[in-house]
Amino acid sequence: MTNTTLQYYTSKHTNTMHSHIPFHYNAMTKPRTLNLTFFMQDIQIFEIFLAVLVFLLIHSLRQKRLHGLVVWPVLGMVPSLVTGLRTNLYEWITEALKRQNGTFRFKGPCFSNLNCIVTADPRNMEHLLKTKFPLFPKGGYFRNTVRDLLGDGIFNADDDTWQKQRKIASIEFHSTKFRQLTTESLFELVHYRLLPVLEASVKKSVAIDLQDILLRLTFDNVCMIAFGVDPGCLRLGLPKIPFAKAFEDATEATVFRFVTPTCVWKAMRLLNLGVERKLKKSIKGVDEFAENVIRTRKKELSLQCEDTKNRSDLLTVFMRLKDENGRPYSDKFLRDICVNFILAGRDTSSVALSWFFWLLEQNPEVEENILAEICMLVSQRNDIKREEFDNSLRFRPEEIKKMDYLHAALSEALRLYPSVPVDHKEVVKDDTFPDGTVLKKGTKVIYAIYAMGRMESIWGKDWKEFKPERWLRDGRFMSESAYKFTAFNGGPRLCLGKDFAYYQMKYAAASIIFRYRVKVVENHPVEPKLALTMYMKHGLKVNLYRRDVAQIHRHLGRVQIN
Ligand code: HEM
Image (cartoon, rainbow, N blue to C red; front, top):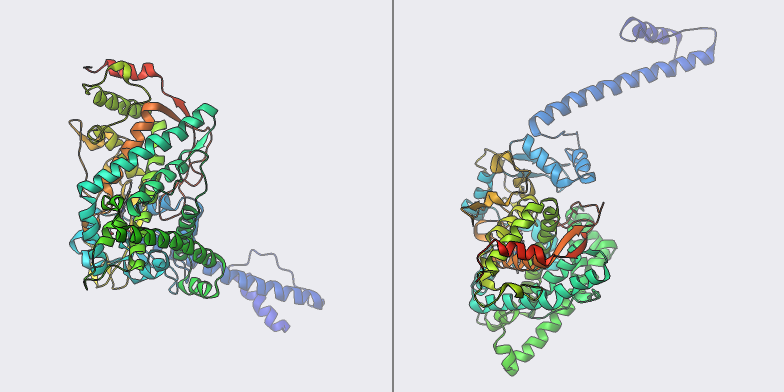
């Protein structure tokens, strides 16, 4: 660079915005001249950098005002999402939705599969789940991502394949025989397995992971309903069960696909690498178990054993039926049906119960009210004396059904901590949401169930409070619109197991609360895990203490005893 050029730079910079920068030029010293040149170039780069930064800042603030989140060039909203992932993603979504009046468009990099509409607006929910139901199937993206594990089962199916399964399963779920199966299997599990495991921990004075124990309970229970087989996860010693482990690994590895670019996980599957290798292995474990049960059941059915005639589990029900061509359903289809029901009922009730017990500890007045309701109901029995109310008490189905306050408390826990925190649909035809959001064919829609339970516009100013009373009118449980309280989905795809889930949760909760006080271990961290279901990331470590009989009798004393 010549001196003239240098002078040009010098005068430009000293005369304009950088006149404040100290600058000494000595034409006799060549190396100094060079240093100076670089220094000046640095200043230019710095200027450009500063200008870009200011531009980005103004642009980002404008975008944030428009979209609720900062939109970066190329990366879109991904940097904000990373912040959410490092803290609590569900809270992050909730805050973004609150800023944007219930709906926002998430913009990811154009090459990613992250672009979607996120909503928590009840008007949109009704539109999505009921009014325009055919326009919003699960869609190809979801189906392809979970097909290896779920096949063509109810969770993963749309249109005719879904309708067929839904119809048969719905008839089955409402049949007397099935209700009998669910009540009896739960009774056995609670009294002969759950309570002995809990009592053992009390005797040894050791803390237990209540979430793990409840997961074992619901896993055994749903396997009895779907396959008619008890895997025996919930037993003293809490054994490792290969099928349960394979199922857990397979779901975790499948979830991983949602956060991996499609081409990447497909390449990994092809090359049998990493998580995909684990997924393949665990699906093999699930399949082997299913094949074995299906083979044995077929044999039993062909022999017309007396035992099989009374079976009302889903596998046996579907095995007795024929498809539209008059042929028995294939083994693969039977496997898909059972695996999907296990997924649906495996962890949803147990994680809901875990959050419920955690909330209960912070709201002792709610626990007292539940205990009072239980005592009031059992005191109405005319075949038992007050002195006989002890650990051996077993609730009757009609008593469980009448536990309105407990029902309300569980609904309140599900409002704040829904087992399925977010769900997804795909748009198959251009449409517009009632709130004016334009939806193009192929757009993914995420409905934020967790956020919906925390909207002041839906639940009022006291939305933060754990308040079962908000569900009660004159002491009776009053359900809320499925498009405001979306924990069980709504419309034609409303959770099929909702009634059973409430019965199961109420039975297990009442049986525990009647006998024990549940105390969370001091400083035990409680936060949600990122998964399809809202697990507690570190489980729920608790100590159990036998309930004081005097406390039970105090409640009983307040009600009329026969
Ligand atoms: C607290 C407990 C439960 C909650 C919060 C819950 C929630 C849900 C939700 C949100 C869906 C919609 C999922 C989707 O389509 O993406 C669903 C569907 C379903 N649930 Fe549940 N569920 C619970 C327990 C159960 C249980 C115990 C069973 C069965 C034993 C069950 C069976 C089903 C089935 C079969 C579907 C699919 C319905 C369809 O697509 O037509 N659920 N559930």
